[in-house]
Amino acid sequence: MRLALSLRFSVCLKSALLVCPFLSSGLSLAQNSVNHTVSAPLAKLTLRVYNYARTDPASLASSEKVADAILEKAGIEAVWVNCPLSQKEVRAHPSCDSEMGTADLVLRILPRRMTAKLHHPNEPLGFAQICSETEPACELTVLDHEIEELGTRGYRADRIMGHTIAHEIAHVLIGPRHSEEGIMRGEWTSTELQRISWGISLDFAGNQSTQLRNAALRRTTPPTPKDLLQANLIAH
Image (cartoon, rainbow, N blue to C red; front, top):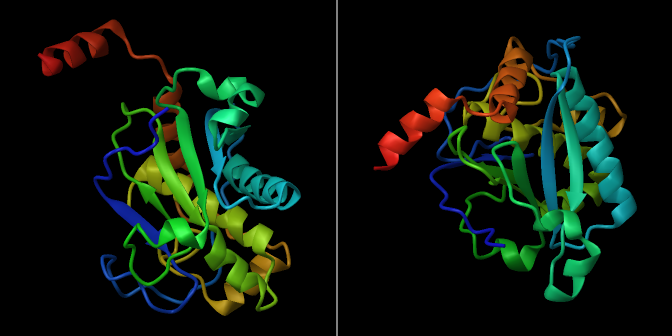
């Protein structure tokens, strides 16, 4: 399966106080976010996980649980599917052979040696592909070594990774913009990292939860005959 999709634009998340050069400046240091829990049925997304960094399975499962809790508040259910990293592992992961739709996202967890080829500035924690809602297999990437570096400073790497995954999923769904508070800030302060490590989650702010759920639902809703006709006309 081909994972290298055309990267039209990507956004990055940092743990330092500097913003990635291609992001707008002027983000505030506000720490409190608005928590909007959605009570309607959950929209479902499938994450095909390629753990190139060989992150410890127990730690990765903990990160997925953290991301689950954050996304559920926005009305989104994530289904995690571990995928093979080599031809030898293909038989052990049959679910990864199925065709991918618009509700299928690809999560790559990369080690330092693979990150060096990406040319992303200022060592972000992760970044995401921004693609249309009709495009399948959109990618989000988490940089394992950057998160592990925070772990050496006393922060909980598994919880930070969970937040990073949720942050990048949101970018895939609603685009590259960051907010001035909550999980979608362009960088997290040391205070926010400490709160994350204590198990106090950063949540989506304002109407982001509604935007996310609506975007996820549009990806999971089968196209109407009219949509298919329009797509065919555009294709020709």
